[in-house]
Image (cartoon, rainbow, N blue to C red; front, side, top):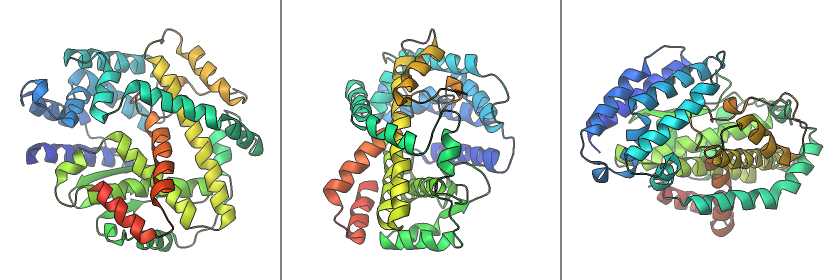
Length: 368
């Protein structure tokens, strides 16, 4: 990749971070248009890399303008009704993907992620089938309904961490990752999880200061993104910009799992594992809904209720389907979390033998 496009992508990441974290109001459409103009002059689609193809769709003006509009609403707490915008975004992504020779947006995403849709769908379906009964047991254990899901999860095992920096240091040292702190900066002043890289030397992480076991999981998940960004771009920035979303989320989910395995007393680890099992069941069902939504969107509310009825919980105060998860911004993303959990479990089972430094070295090589 050319250095000038890298600079544009870093600029976009920086503006996005400042809009989220510093309440600035950068017009992201301007920089998105610059990126699209650059990519559209590189040649025909067959000459582009997979990451460039993905960006050619995401930064096409009809796509990026609508996505940025929804993102503004997301950042403002969804004060506006965005249902029609979300459906329109799906439609224009399909349209632009087809112009590039793909069957639809799903086909584009699968190509750029090196995934097969039928295999992915089968993996998600199998995960639901194998883990649904356990998830229902946990739902009863923690008295979860759709209305209190996140509130109750965040209230599991309140903790009082006096030195979060020391905990992070111990984790990084345990796996030989301590050097990443030279580029990672963590902000605890927003109730959200978010990671990005805004320059070659600045990896930015946002996570709520841990007050519960749920918060701990979020922190180590976001830290996982930061670790990946560091090692993936040790030699050049191109590798960072070519990270697929599926690998990005896999590595973050892997760090969650390693933290619960190695860093906490048994009672805390068991509760962290309960939260992991519940959340990745939720994202599995959410992904299954999205797969159907692309083909059957005449009555998304009914489809949404049908999928979530599998959990056997009261659907009181059911969130509007278009505000759930990251669906407002990308209705082909949430599967990455459950796919990450499936892959993380296999990697740990096959390669982790309680030697943290050896496993850390193995993970560095994967990142590179």
